[in-house]
Image 1 (cartoon, rainbow, N blue to C red):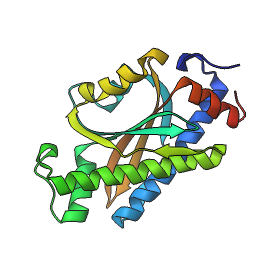
Image 2: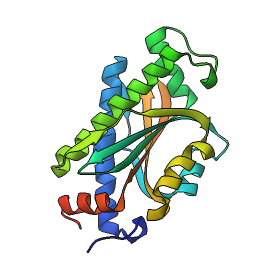
Image 3: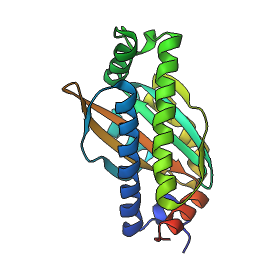
Length: 206
């Protein structure tokens, strides 16, 4: 039976989506490790279905300043992915590629912004490829759009675009250790309802 909104997901379907989140997140972290040339230890990601307000609170509240990378996906699955990068991860990325940490998240120059954008693009591609291979689907990834702002403003874009489907999303909380520094990154997966139905059917839990 097809679902009409995220709230219709049953416990088995949510468990399967958690596993999809785990696999995709592992692939994305492997890509990050390869790009940075660093060993990254990752814990099992925490994956749950949350509403937008709960997701904002889980990241740090609507006034928390963060970098959001929005990546649209299409093909057999339509929707969007959003990576949320905090200051410590951005500083580590910039220092790895450019030799010095930025003063703050707003002081990034064009080359540094481009590097973070490309990293998000490659991580999203790795994540989506894992889902595509798992479910036997063809999924295309558009170039990311990055915004540095307060979290409430960043989250307003997917909230408005996906709002007609309900207010739920797949929230993936990654805890990594890079160079003995604990770093958390968050990812939001928001397929359209039709796409979510198609994915669940392909995974055998429609």
